Length: 199
Image (cartoon, rainbow, N blue to C red):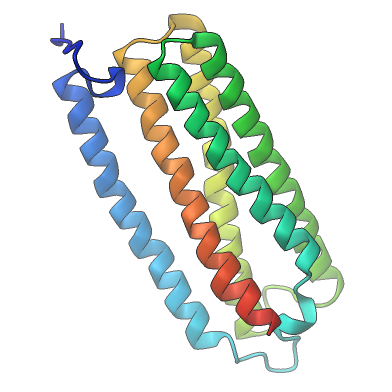
């Protein structure tokens, strides 16, 4: 049985937990490279619209602001979930995680509306290099959010069944790092794809 250090937060309380958190930071480094490559491709292809629309013609500020507000709010609630976890409150941890996942679902709903809108106005993935890389970048982020929803749900089930212990706390903390990472990526998407594209 792993030795538990009660002087440290629950998610860091064993050597195995420390290694898992370090390993996840390494994984996030690879994710940064993935999104960095997508952004580099986007900046290269953004003006290659061919006969298709440009960003200024298809971007709508309403859905973009809604997505941004929803995802930033979810970053706040996952932070509250980790705080509640550290205080040992299983109920509050589960409640804030549930709110986080509901906000993630709301984000995906707006994104699905956005993709439907793009398809309706003729901005499909095969229309131009610009629409191809745009939808690939947005879709990759959306896929990560979808994975996060299932991941978070599985962690909630484990907390509900097993309570807060070094294992479930470690999983919850690592999930929170993943969720915050998705929020940071979205800020870059909001700033350098949407806002720049609307100018």
